[in-house]
Length: 215
Image (tube, rainbow, N blue to C red; front, side, top):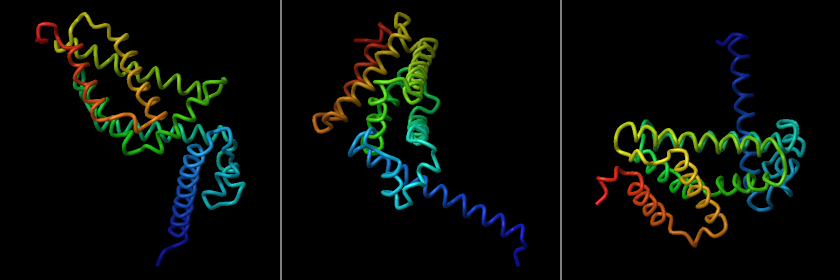
């Protein structure tokens, strides 16, 4: 027979599970509404109601719409980071660049609704100073630093030509990634993702490889 302590602990777990479930449903509702309306016309009231809860729960849980958007930002970034790391792992140099490109290609296919909502959120944040915009700037810097590190290590290993400017290549790499996402958002059907990313990986390897290795 369970004692009071065991029952109390079990109750806390149940409450935590209910909270996690309601948060997940509200995140899903926010993604749906952002895709349908954009962030400006998405309200906490509508998010709570679409998720199946009282109109005040989202406000109680997140405090403000920006609070929910920031949580959604963190959730998306964690999801993308886990996905990216599963591809790149401990790879460096050309292998890391190719793996990161493949990771984005597959993320666009598997997480299209999530990706679309987050980029709508990010693009709409550019017109004003906000915490979302500040965090986006930070994450862009991290992505460039990651790519720069992959190139530096590839040069150290002797597989990437010493003439490559790692920092500038990182900017170009991110420009390809984010530019592709932008075009995909505008008209996904216009892009053959497999062909596009396959061509990029081949061209990136030709650009980066030691000059004597290029035929």
